[in-house]
Image (tube, rainbow, N blue to C red; front, side, top):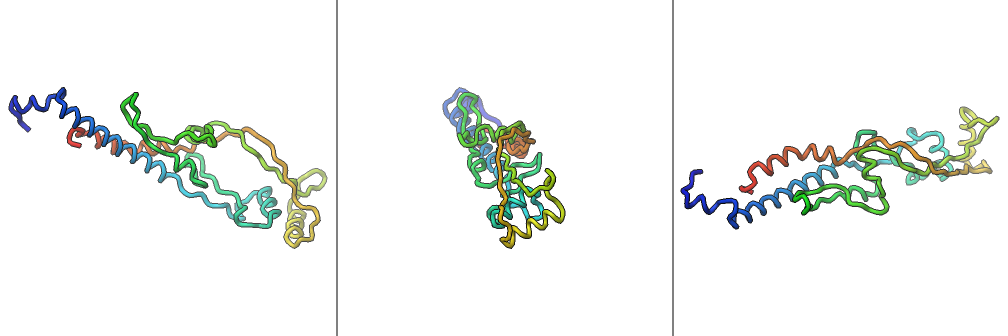
Amino acid sequence: MQLTFKQAKEFFLDRMKVLEAVEKGRVDSLRRVGGFVRKAARRLMRKSRRLRESELSPAQLALWEAGGRKREDLPFKSSEPGEAPRVRKGTLKKGILFAYDPATQSVVAGPVKFDIQGDAPATLEYGGSAEVTIFEPSLPARKGRPAKGKQLEAFRRKLADGSLKRRVSSGQRRKRVRIARRPFMSPALEKARPVIAQEFKDLIKS
């Protein structure tokens, strides 16, 4: 596009209408980029399913059977290391938002901080350690060793038909465990890079 000097003066960067156009275009682009990152991160989080009976550990199976084999008591399946976290209640997923940062004049996207979450979002994104509650059922034992094989099958059979007087008891303790990375924001940002480049390629035309 060729302009005369008079026409060009109207579009100098210090002209109010140019500044307004640039600001409006930048804000609109930031809004679209932030929205894209938020949507991409949320889409990575699939709904969690409950474990099948065949996937339960002996301890989990014993607790489940002691509780009456109710489907709603089955534990949830966690995502694999390297995958985005699975959704249960959806608190983390719904908490992913984006907002304008006036200090850097940029957009920030990510999970907002909830008291109930603590450092959970950062631990999931980057990996780390966390203190969890471990439930340990006391299974029938023989000579100090956990029951297995026919003894464990007999225990389960008696528990199911109600002929077992003593029910499974469970204790709990706190334990610090290592949490593998389950990133959701960094993959979302990678998906957004082409969108970011396109949004700011012709900013004044926005």
